[in-house]
Amino acid sequence: MGRILGLDVGDVRIGAAISDELEITAQGLETIKRKGIENDIAGIKEVIALNNIEAVVVGLPKMMNGTIGIQAQKVIDFTNILKSKINIPVFFRDERLTTAEVQKRLIEADVRRNKRREVVDKLAAQLILQGYLDSRRIKGKSGFLRLAVVFYLLTFSLILILIIFVYIQNSINRPLSGIGNARIVYIPKGSNLKAVSSILKREGIIDNTFMFNLIARYRFSQGILKAGEYQITPDMSPLQVLDAIINGKVYQYSVTIPEGYNIFEIASLLHKKGLANKERFISLSFDREFIKSLEIVSAPSTGSGLEGYLFPNTYYFSKEIDESIIIKKMVDTFRNAVWDRITVKSREIGLTPHQIITLASLIEKETGREDEKPVISSVFHNRFKKKMRLQCDPTVIYALLLRDFKGGMAAYDGNIRKYDLIIDSPYNTYKYAGLPPGPIANPGKSSIEAAMFPDNSRYLYFVSKNDGGHYFSSSVEEHNRAVRIYQLKRTKT
Image (cartoon, rainbow, N blue to C red; front, side, top):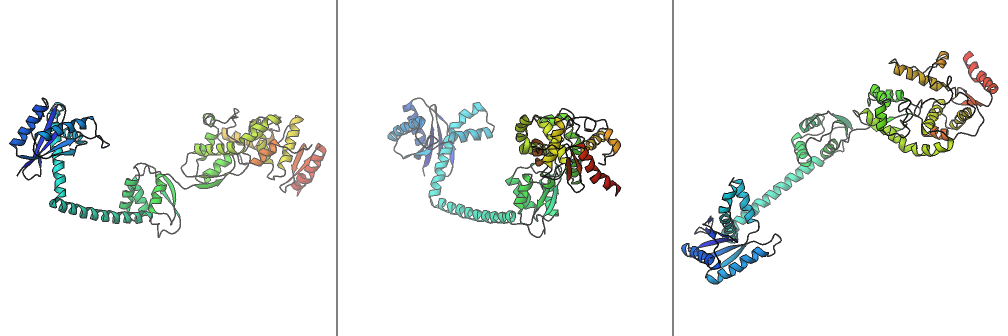
């Protein structure tokens, strides 16, 4: 029985390999050093004669796109000459990446660089020949049986993969059941995947921690699970639960900041809701460096903090959120809601944006009736023109709040007394003319509008009628009569 010769034709050497007599395996022969076309072919003919070769396989180094390049053409030209000199069949075998594969194997075998040159051509010829032998067997009967086995194994594997895929899809996409109403599940900081799956199993959210962990490892990266509270509903699937935790879709609590709340009241409200630390919220609201970082164009320089710039609105915050983020959200809302309008109008009425906000806070604290706000604004504007003191009770209350805050005392209870009116504070509008140095609360949009667009009146005074409204007067005599009617009679009764 004859053998088959494999050749790897290079510019310097020709690698050679022969098959065994059964044409199953390829073994390398000594490399032929090229010494001219006649000597090269003579060397190949000698190998053919000594080894009973019945066919020759030559590696054809095509380009990666399958075209014939310069090197491949050289091999074709050489092979055509070889065919004319021998009387046995000569075949080409595509050898793209063969040399690269040989280099990879030699590197993996830790063969030194200088030794690789000696064996690379031999191994390349061996791989070319072995590929040819394998392809022949697949075409034969034995190859058919082998192909049939491979086909059945592949079919079985595909069916098994399909079953597993369907099972996994059902497991991860089937809505949760048996957990009743929506619930809040807390994932502590630093929890890894194992801890998270255990929590979900304990809460009855998932029933298979192995499957959950497997999905998480293959679908997402480890180490990106976000801590916090998550609302899990019965219609969510395990995959949706996993997606929520990975993307940090924590539960958001609704909190409404009423118009006219000051910093201290907002801090207390958030503290009661469990959304912020009261002391830290207040401290940050008066921290100059933090205020500077918010880049408020008319940032107060008087020490009034962010009073007036925390816009009243309904917000959604998660627990464990940093107080700085809450404050920034409120300031951003203020900026988006009213800032542009304030800056434009300030140039028309001769007040700075900070003064407009300050005036709006006084209006906000004096009345809750929308129809009265422009009228009260007109009273303050008229007093400005006459250089009268504003004599606004809420400014005295705020002065007392600041005094107690700076002194580390309990917050003022809000009840104003006669002797409180003499407190020496720039916020005391009974003692000092003009606006206080900063807002005394956080006004809503309507109060800011009223500050910029006062009613056209000549009123200089107003007194509460104790029904939510006020009586407005243009003279002190009329005002005193109103006080006797609405305040002194009430005191006597």
